[in-house]
Length: 207
Image (cartoon, rainbow, N blue to C red; front, side, top):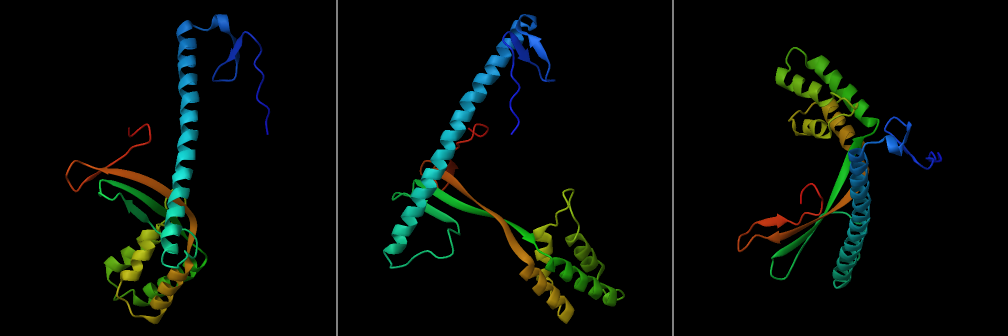
């Protein structure tokens, strides 16, 4: 870990890393620096409190779901998966625990692609241009080098019975891996007597 640079008394470090005597800095620049530092310090404190709050209510929800399952002599298996919506008794308040999983493909996607390309070569004269375009688009990578999960999975909806195609679709299904899973908490309150719910915003940008 790199030790922070020690700033001598009577100096401030500018954005380029240069030491500048405090008496040479304009008063408005010092005031701006003080304002930004104060805001960031408070924001970091609030961020820590929000993180602790999120962890606490997630634990409370997990405990409640375990308690509910125990009433039926059941126990949750396979970890904490699936979205959960909890409503207040009067239905005016709602808490949603949502799971967002990031999917990726392993090496079997390349096998599927090779099988599909072989099909296209053999079908070239009778293939629908739309299907060829759809297949080519499915394996395009973005600027980060990633393949679109939704486009690849969309190929499974095509009604094609060629055995090689079916093997390719099976390879795609088996190649799907969960790279990461993140849980989110969202809270809502009913708008008056309507059926609509308004989110309770906890982030600064959306407040």
